[in-house]
Image (cartoon, rainbow, N blue to C red; front, side, top):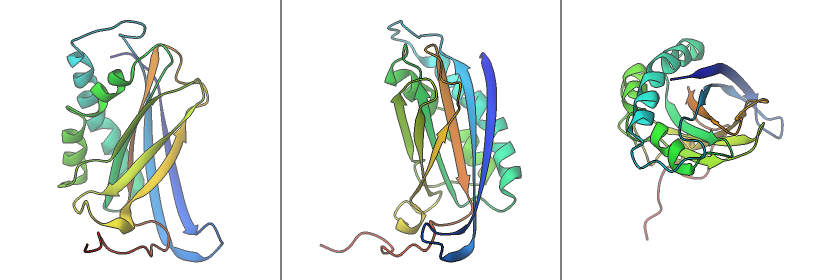
Length: 181
């Protein structure tokens, strides 16, 4: 595992986009810039990337839990793959093994972790989806953090992102779940 850098961000939201005050909502994210050993190569066995996701999940999420300062209610994950990589390289970091250490660090997590992956340019952004860790159908908790690292990903890198939140979106008002048909 070759990590070039790790970046943490913390958002403290006290009003919506219209300036309407709200109860404070805190969102935190970790972004680890890792070398992609399969950049430019078609590789059938991506299991070494499963291990990278698992090994990064624990320390990054523990730091996020400390930064959040309150119990995590929402979580999510995303990757931005450099231009010489493939979408599946990012999926290998996210899906098979990253969730277990994140769930352990946040004390549960019955819901599937929302995720996003895309191939993008140096300094590109990725939207990290957030959802309630235990109630998948809680529309109030469906949210997004847009993240980027100005000098990443280089063509042979992947930016792995994990995010947590202590609450809902600002002033949610679209309903509590699916409407009956």
